[in-house]
Figure (cartoon, rainbow, N blue to C red):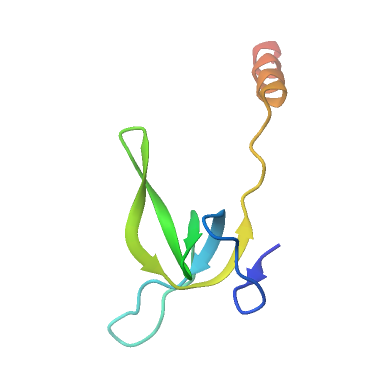
Length: 89
């Protein structure tokens, strides 16, 4: 569930999904919200940028409107079961 940043902020350095508006069009209208993954630090949200199998921090501070904790990743058992199921199909 999305959490309004005015209601609660993530913990410092917490990895999250966050929604932000990053681009204003020339006519003054604002683009639809964008969802990014990243982390919260010193009152700002920063997105992760991936390149060459490395995850790097973006230098752009983003003002988010909403955020949510990242879900837990799949366990090894779930991944193994999915691989087995694909082999059976």
